[in-house]
Image (cartoon, rainbow, N blue to C red; front, side, top):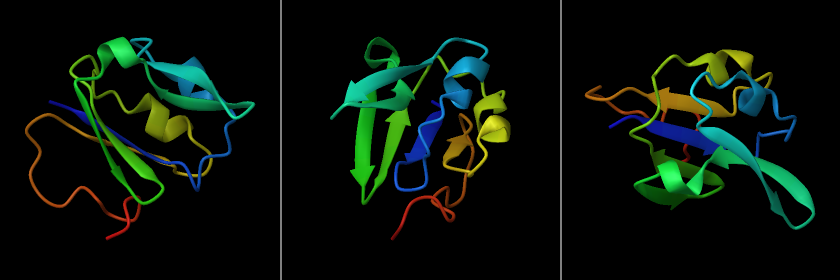
Length: 94
């Protein structure tokens, strides 16, 4: 299952990823008066928090990575279904 990883410390809350998502997986959610981009709750099978990052299990993600390409601060990473290796990279702190 694809994993969509957001680093909310890097995220500028610009909404470009929400607008770019080809399968309308992402949406802005109001948190403390600020619009936060994240996968729609009804399309997430699980979430793991790690520091300022959130790792969402998203079966509806098409792995197109348009959100990753669009993000001006590289706050999003998509680990495709079946990919092996360490997907934390720079986004998820140890």
